Length: 306
Image (tube, rainbow, N blue to C red):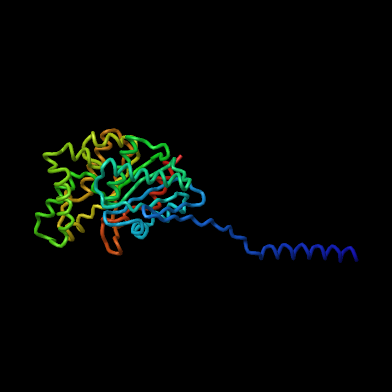
């Protein structure tokens, strides 16, 4: 009898222990908070386990804060172990050699100071930020920095071919419709007239200074680099809101540029045409950061990273 009671007690104790453990909440593993650094030149977000580096350039009148608020790329990248460097460098559709060196020196210094892994580095930008990205990609192809190993570049609806930008801007200035939007076109024409001249007369200057032009010589420096050209060719929106034809749009130029890159042997040059994704500052606009599928972009980075 005593033995039976003792066995029963042991069984009850074991049952209680099992029930008690089953009722306990599973301890949650606290994820390390990404480290953030803010300077006048950039904002830097570094995940706890960094695997790659993504450098983003804003549109002409924008900054790092605007990039972060207008796109989910930063959140998605950091969530997947990719450090993001959001640059404040803006207001450039072309750059001098000295400006390129200065921006690259800023990036290299940030890599050193923050002990970043930069063997898988990607550069991209929206609008004129894409111009800056491709100019830097070419500069790195010409003169590599040992601290930064560039694995890919992308542009989001960017006016990479300055000769096309000149011609389309001049057409916008000459059309009587939408006078309220002609300021930017006038500024572009004045800038290019004063620095490069007419593209018909100064084709060589445009080829040398454009981030990417529809010529083999311009495309060759990017022959080995995976490239993405994002655009949203909403012809109805552009016709209704700006009176632009397809030939006036960045989409038209980017389509030609992708073919030119493929023509010089870059089989990893992609044209990514989206539909109904463009939202700019809360309003429908096909010229926007939001046309980029951030999850798919991160997958592209992960595939290309070692």
